[in-house]
Image (tube, rainbow, N blue to C red; front, top):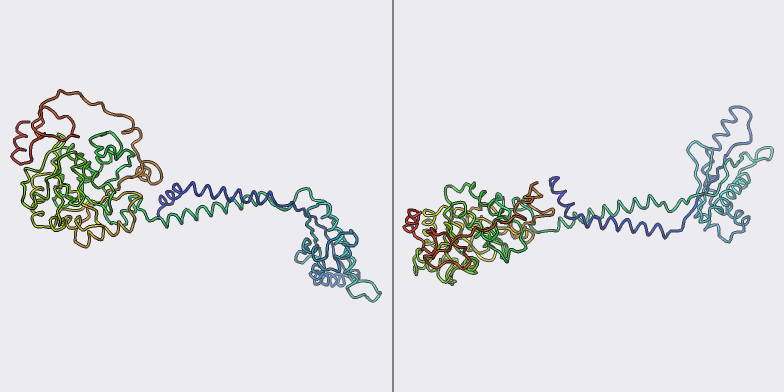
Length: 501
């Protein structure tokens, strides 16, 4: 993974990370506020020997006390030391209970013993620490063997008395809040990483490129009104989504397909936008001056005729079975150099028709007469029509819906093309959000800004002119000299129209 991938994960899961961080902070805050404050007070004792006047005797006494210091530390929490303290202070506690609040430490190579007592009452903590120090000073000389003169060889002197603490030692509010904040942040990052690893949807161009091993030739911006205006290049040519199709048109022209220019547009599953992508791409190509043939090769659920508002009762099926000539069923659309061949009636054997020799000859003839041939085909995973048809064309264009198609589905559809020896020319990522971490523009560092978002070109009013034939109900008003409007497709008619212009 690259740095941009980590940044995208953080941007995508920032709300989860922030929420869990705040949860950790709030949990530790609640825990801290519900704890009873505990105060600590310490008293220090110095251990020394009472005998010896020479330097050697003093050194020997010092070694003796250092050797015994750990023993004295262990005596601090024993009943023999604590019971006198309880009796002196008149406390109702027990030695076992009191020992849990008492600690004693001694530094290395030192004869100082520090006794620390924890208690909710700072005054009581100081009193207990001083009382325990006094009790230890009395008990130790009694336990050590007497010297020749009957005195104890060691002496414990209190050098520091405990004082009531001003601030509680527990809970440590800053430390607890820092721990809660860090724990919540770590938990949030862990959940973000888990969500990313479990997310099986294809959301970015890089993910699709990794799976298909094919180049990205376009990314179609998401439009909330896509159902209302599917032909966005025709209905709103200045919108960001329409600009996406023009970028796709430009990238398509740079593909090296060995001199051929016929493409099958398909997808892994249904509802990924393959039909609208095919139609809008055809319109964009025609607007650029290309002669485009749009063939509805989805002989199971055809949609091109419905989107374009043309009669789809006769079409590709009739041409393949010899019932009609292509000149009779291929119609122009929209006043552009765009000719549309509907699917026609749904046959009982779509795969056999699309894979027939006649279909191959038909596509070859279209490639001779048109600059670009686009075939809208069914999805790859449910049926094999698109894979079969892709072998007869220069390559397939895979439409991948961002956030809808899974990685397994995309890998399966790619494998379906590879199995039949078809070439995957490239893929188009559709329904890409225009904002957010998965946005195409944010991922690649540029956007349209104000272009295509607020400005709309006012239509130019022109005089109406009688049409030469039936036209699409959704087609715009044509020019007076529109040679393609209402004329059937034929090479002769095209040449005559060119001479008239």
